[in-house]
Length: 182
Image (cartoon, rainbow, N blue to C red):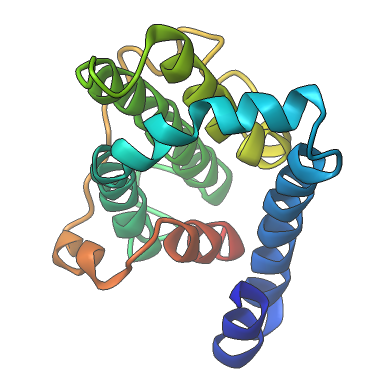
């Protein structure tokens, strides 16, 4: 279904970047499901109830990340006080820190659902979400990861045209569009 959407709605570098994202996510899902009675699949099934109960909380966190990424699409590639390379690095840092903050948000919000999510399940959900995007974040983020403190004090840049952030229903499309325009 995602491939059909990508083929119908995108072209060029955006289509290629979306294909890489879909491939990475699909390969992680397949790794969990390859052996339905194996330890990875059992771990996924163990967090299923928490994922299901926490889906609205997870979506809220994704929306915040999306709203931090989408304005970068309209931010000029070059500003008077920064060259293209500096501006590109700032955009990458903001994307990566938005993802780090999304994971922390998910962890915090799911931890509040004590009747539905145990601490072990919350850790499992966050680990699962990280696994879905580790290939992509590992390639782009460098020091701006959940394992470093670079995003702890990161000041997010908000573009003047931030009213269009809600035009996307997912953070994937604005993410790919920003990366394609670096």
